Length: 405
Image (cartoon, rainbow, N blue to C red; front, side, top):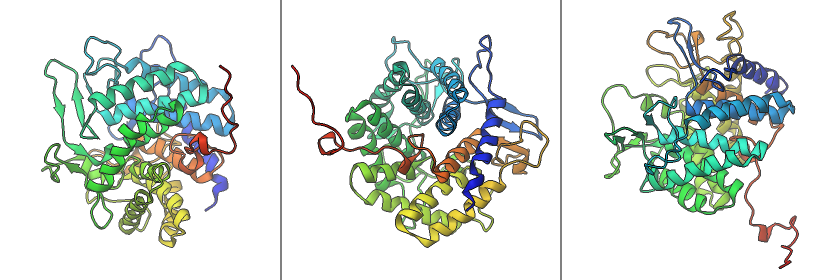
């Protein structure tokens, strides 16, 4: 791997995001950036709650990588859009603290998406030490522990209207929620976020969501826990067989904090399964279309787990995936709404992945490449590059507590 070219490629991708960010205090979209652009149909729309969060995470990582305060300023703009989505009406505690999905007018939200919005607010606090950002994340966590989970696993979707409607099915892609609780604990020192958040999610994920070959079981029924297979198109099944939305990263964090390698071993099994089904060109194909976001996530997993276990299969897959990630960046176009971004997941009216782009893949690629470069620490999804928990009682670098009163 030629890691020397990583920063140049990352900067092009983040420049693309910044170019399309709304900065206009008279525009209610201020802070958002381009989420999806389909150059064939002309369809385009801005980032929702969680996508604005991962955009903000990229800006915070670039701030740490460069020291340029412009990235931090733009990250705060994104953070304030997320704040405008938070439900602060206390008349109905079932929603107090969560986030509207897309705009302040949205009646729906997915707890997993709202989690990412709150999660990236944790990292905005980490970078700025402004208390309100952490307060917003804590407010969400308190809602989520009380109303957003059933049996220790997050709910699928909730509608905040008079019907009080919910989707109850349990999705594997909720697994990354545990990492939000892990990161929030490191900023608050509140152990409830480990015991009531990370632990039940990590335990349930390992027990219920993997086949023997390491592949993911995407859906289970809420109360029977039976494997659920829905007829017809399901974007979750199409994509989340390969893109776990950071479940593996959560398992690696769980392995450290619980001092139990069963979690990392399961992460390795999934990574090996991913390597076994990876296409020759480094992409992933679900029988219908390529899954671009899985390239970014698998790059993180192949590299970190490959080095941890000194696993030649994963290290070889990391090389192939790194090459594919660079090939996916759109540098052969004069369309400003494509240049610098990464190719997206094909759609019905756009079968060519190089004719469209989506924030999910763009942001995941930026973070994956910065992890691979390894020049910064303490950033979203940093994993081995981030500060890990140690009980202060056992930390020899800390002086004893000074009693005064």
